Image 1: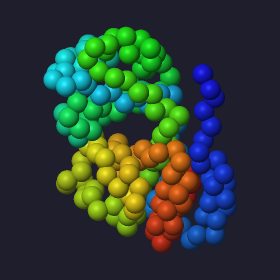
Image 2 (image 1 turned 90 degrees about the vertical axis):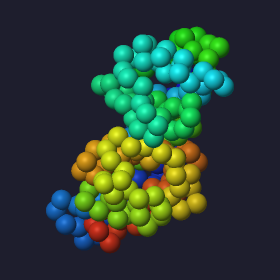
Image 3 (image 1 turned 180 degrees about the horizontal axis):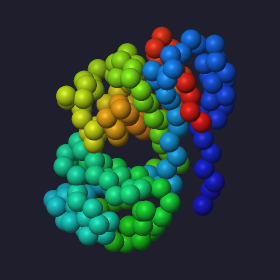
Image 4 (image 1 turned 180 degrees about the vertical axis):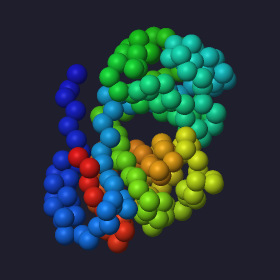
Length: 201
């Protein structure tokens, strides 16, 4: 397997040094970091097979299937339900079965696409994370509406992203096409600058 390289490497050091000149509260109101998953898979059920896929995956992974626009967790594995019969699965280490084993297990009922090299995951957290995201995202991310465990596909500016609230702090994950990762990270950094932003590497 090809080694994974961060799509953000060229800009992280530059933005971090720029952030040293931004007046920040202690602790900073916004923290940006790149999240590294060992595997990112998209599972799409064949027509009429959604319930079958949910049952198969639940038994295989030992975790209950998520309801629509929610996620479920099992140690280092996250299972997100993004649409009817479409799920995004992320894992660390060996939490996820090997790709070919998962494809064999779901043969005839679903497709499994490896997005590990095709997506970059950016985490944004802190007291001003919602205000920062609101500058480019029309989705209501207030905790009374978008609670911890919520996930959906939306847009930040003109970019399509998958956003997940992973903690109450608040903290969010944004999955974006690798080719747009630098632009999204820079946009978030600039949007957060007025609140005080730091980059956690």
